[in-house]
Length: 147
Ligand code: ZN
Image (cartoon, rainbow, N blue to C red; front, side):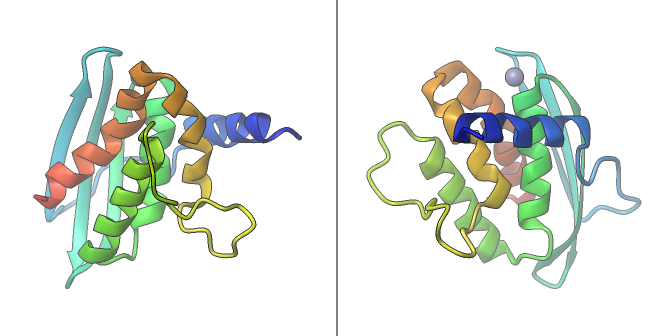
């Protein structure tokens, strides 16, 4: 399977079967975000166990890129500390940046490639309008974490 096709499958899978969908009973932090260009909406709730995100829940509507990216984000941050999440978010942002100069660690041959499914979104960076869709969940997360 061509890489691009594989990426499309990963995105559609997260869109059709979003991970960590719903609401939490007593979230420690929450934020809402919208991308008016596309009509995407995301609401994120998290709970902490010490410094670790123990639970995360997302609700939202919009295009497949925005919703699947948020789903991938929830998987990436669960069980991680604030510092680890900051690192994941900055890797994501480097990946989405067209003029990225650094190696963001996206070599698929590398075991433990940090971003996992999220790498499927790197094709999106060719479409600047869609970068806002892909980034919505991540920016909303950072709002929720107050960073
Ligand atoms: Zn969108």
